[in-house]
Image (tube, rainbow, N blue to C red; front, side, top):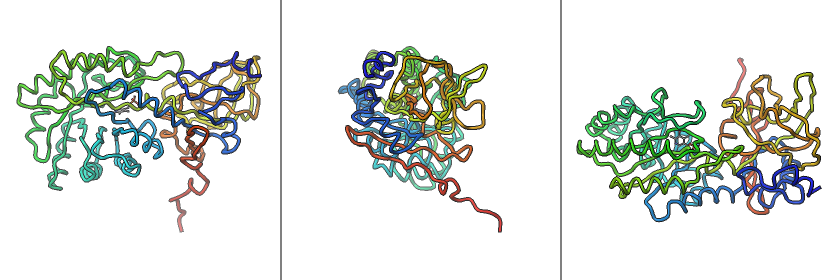
Length: 432
Ligand SMILES: *Cc1c(COP(=O)(O)O)cnc(C)c1O
């Protein structure tokens, strides 16, 4: 069975070295995923602690002795245990809301390593971030700059500010996750940035410290980053001419991972080129900030789900599973591709399946057109589900959100309980 299963399935799932077959059973590190699914129930998110550390270390190794702050783009996976792990490894955090700020603080993250991004920051969120002492606000518009000035002045504080500029480069990724083009809602157009910086320098309660951009997600090429960097450095030159000196340059996140057959962009490949460009342009002294999300967690997690029914219709074969679009939204939202792997492969006689959930929407699918050998009742793993998985989960169709588990060597820890019916109706009440 072992030999046969390694023939039909790769020994290691794509890009996820901490998930591998042992005696014919898919494991996360030393823990059987079949055991986890049977013991804790499905749908179930399973993360590997070692995979988180490996991904973070790949950044540290690429950074070497350069002055770089990695701020984990935590919207990719904001479970407290995940945040605590990155905090322990020395990471900072890129937050996009007051809720994310509260999570970082609850996980013991260092506020002085927080950058605050997002196009719609509210006054209360600005106040909370100022009081926490965040490193910097990544400001995305002139009205935001004015609101921030008013909030910090009122508190008698100073907000350190970086303007998020939109360098108008094509990240060559899915339109829904491309953010650096002119038509996107994000950032300040680079042509308008000098005027915005002059305004920022003149406003009370604002200290200009940096510049940033984030051009998109799941990027697998170096060129868009280097184009963006080039435009940012030209802007920094221009600002110096206006007497505005910056301390840091933030290149955002966006490095892609392997879902299928992509060749991910390794941090070292990117950073070697970035350091060379900074050196050549006389900016080796600038602190570099990075905001990687997906590349730190995407392949550190899988979603386990149990096959409920195999439904054969004239047009299609459906594997109806107990996970759905409310648990993992990426396929419905971006037509994203996730690998599907039975946790105990048993046969080489495959059928072409659409893997779908029980939710009453045609968009409720997890994988389409896959050759799989499946039995009712067996557990399958949806791969590369560590990023933008649980964080996007909801309760549509009154479905409780899944539990989350962190594997650590031969042990595992439930890091979020499965929701109950009581959780679903908490806060609701009927008329008297
Ligand atoms: C989402 C986001 C990130 C992280 O992006 P990844 O593609 O997951 O690396 C970083 N910075 C900002 C501003 C973001 O919105």
